[in-house]
Image (cartoon, each protein chain N blue to C red):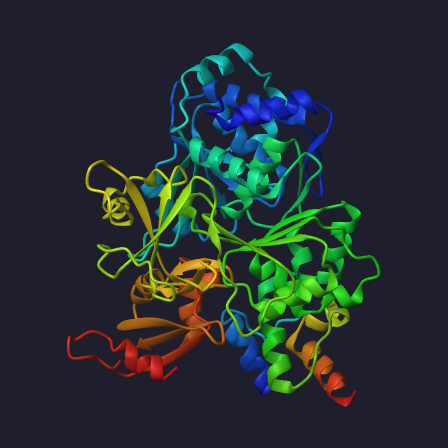
Length: 75
Length: 503
């Protein structure tokens, strides 16, 4: 989780990813942020987040994204 | 003879009065409505306090909507030129731009106006309440010449002050004629506009469509986060022309979105620019939809969108850089040596890419010094005046005689499709009270801006918060490294070479 928070903070140092729960719904992230985060996550966690995973519920918080990563790692 | 872009609009409106010219997620306009609304704005402006002014800047607070385009064209009808201002830009940077620009009026073209902009004219209200005055419009047109400014676009400046590139009618006429000749553009095209209107990539959608009697569909911004829905949108609106930033095409290829859809979009043209297109991403597109004409376009705002193009013939070698190709008709490219004195002509030898032709911008608004630096006499011509624009991009000719981009000669970078002067970020950083000095470098391999700063306090979030009031988001550094003392070289300057090694 710490690694994920580091990745997300590098992309958007202004956002408090530990507490923010509405990253997509409140339009806090944009497409380039998502691409940057997904690229780094895929590299660092050795997963492949796919286009069908690109849903607001998977990206609204760092926690949600971490759950997705964990799920993908088990697949 | 075409000397004003409005002649294109009027010709298309005469050919296709009832055809949809502009469309976004909220509304659409036929060609005749487009003309009427633009003329209404011009009539209003000509009767307001800016009455009688010509070739002066009018700022437009833009949105992802067709109102923004109507505002632009209305301003052109009024005999003035437009300057798009992004509605999400930090207020301090807008002020900085206004200080240089001194706009004679501000038009609010936003869809959501719950927070009003003081002193701005609201396009919607004007269009609803004004009838076009044809005699007035005609009188204004009579006085125009093709070197009158059409638009101004602000770009990052190394001294911390953004520069306004001013482009005239003739340069845009040259652009759309060259595109029509090179690629066979016509009225059947439906442009899926991706580029924000303060990027000159969008100029190609607006004016190619205007010349050809084609349609522009503004693609909503949020779809670029949801690539599957983006492709559905292309199908739904029968979009067949994509003149997009590389970063936008990559959203589809990075997520392999073309694998996940049932109906492939029916595209005729896929053109991209803004930064180097990774061949892997391009090959993904070609593999999945081989039919369109793929074109790599190259050029900075100062030469009106693009000066060279490379038509991609099938999948490319991933180990080779994609060429930027050859110049458009009526454009000449020169490579100059470091001192900007001699021509570089040998294949493989690198020189600064310089551009000559009608496409050259009029210069930077109210900034003679910067204009003279960038637009200068062709050193191979001494007998008459012939200006060229030095792009600052280093390039070479490959074995096929195609130009290939190599690197930059200064501290300008391309980050997430945006052209950024690292110096502008440093100026903003150094203005923060607890930062003693700073230096920014670009980590190309990872696509991240790295900030090295000297300070006694280690508070990244405070820095970003302060930067957020001055710089747009894409200019914020991604990685911050604090130093008690930054390393200096023997000239008492920050040792960038050493810091590069510490990246």
